[in-house]
Length: 410
Ligand SMILES: [Zn+2]
Image (cartoon, rainbow, N blue to C red; front, side):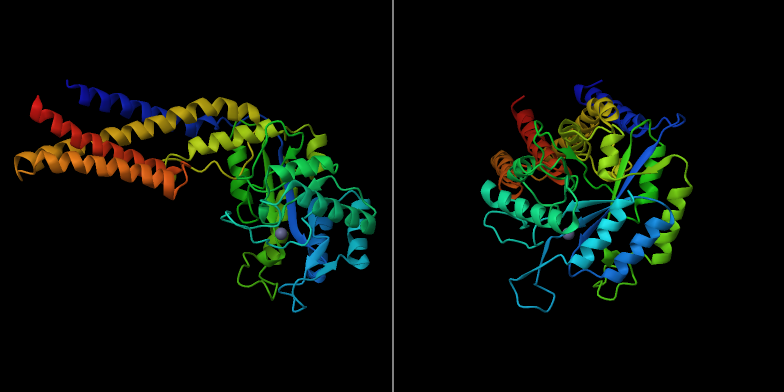
């Protein structure tokens, strides 16, 4: 048996085993467990639709389920028909709605930025309200927003939700300096492993919730958490939803009714999740991001999605090693396949079409340059599924051609 054949068999077995393990690794249902769910409604403000918000509140009241509202203290006037550049503070009437439900233990209020305004910044792909600004600028916005919202609602705020889920390390420092203990953005957010904050990234929307629960149920995780983010424009009934509507109020009612009826589901706020001793530490978020970075190097059609659930540290620590093997198996198999194919094509080009070695050798140099350009310049050195697949395939093609060149001199 040639070395090439042996390598192919080894990598084939390794890859198949890794796929099996990663897919089965989280699956060992049977033990009793509680799946925690947090509902987070963003963009409550002086300009948001109060009638719809009261309907949402009534739904949560009806099923006795708590939720989190992210509240904008000074809503920007852009897109409201008012003079551009202004800010409208949260009104006393809207503040008292919140105060009432918080008093019944049904709601946690989170600070949702300052004015929810995108600040154009140089050198940043996506602009948002905070990332890229200096520490002092961010500190001022967070401090002023918190001070006003606490004054008008009479509450003390501990959770922060950055608008557009955008923030950076300065935001984390400013939050700690202003007495916040929780940040909730998305799963791609920046994390400093020494941060004392709790990280609660959202993992699903209303439509994805049932699938996320299924994923958590089929896992061996006794501490799974699902954070559901929704906005008023998700409801088809909102007239100015701008085509973003996904479900009707009736669907929402059915969803909450289903959640309430499931014995293994427990709906909590950020504060209640912390009190329940769920691990929301920075080091947990670091591990979560690291696992998915490696796991998602393999194209999604090879495995089922593990997104939707914030798996606990114990489960992620076990899966991390196997995710590395899984990704390695995939990339090596890919390399072997492209290497073998190109070796055959290279030999054919040489023997049948009489292509000069000169072209093959220089073609390889061009390919390596392409790989470096693709990864380094187009993707700024960051490796994702497509980048990894394309670069490994190109490198294998390059080595395959060199292999056919080597044979001439053998
Ligand atoms: Zn928002």
